[in-house]
Length: 237
Image (tube, rainbow, N blue to C red; front, side):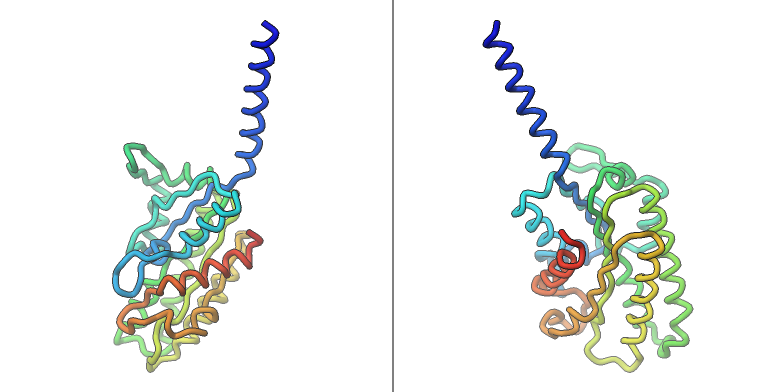
């Protein structure tokens, strides 16, 4: 009887230690568009910033759970926002996941979305001047504000909003002004909702090989690695 009690006590202690360690591990959720997928400039899935970040957390024994269930190509800001409002559910490996539940349970959320809207806007032949584009940019930042408001109403985790880079090597409008303007807007949104904003403009600009295909805005895996490094360095991970 005494041996049985000791065995039960040992099992209980192991369980308590396990649960204590588990409570300190991170549930990491990535949401967004093809950047969050790690798509390269030739339409193939490569090692994205989220994959590097996941590996970093695993190598440092910091991760409990990872999910990228709510990531897809051409995901628009308003579309994601509507999915949150309507609590979108998906089936993955015969199990249902709801976006609200995943956001509530996450300890770390990275968001990259909106590049498709920006590229479509810049490629519009009727918009060649910053002053003509500015109202459209204000609309995009307004949509982003609503998205972040809804995310932070559900999640008290560490939320990281990732900015944009300039995918154009040569263009006849003031593209830098566009991305600088949006970066300022997003930085203000991040402060408003007490989340972290990671500006990636300069780190991608420094190496042209990160964007090998002039007809596509996606990065190489090396480019995504630089984003992952910036996320880690700027967020004390």
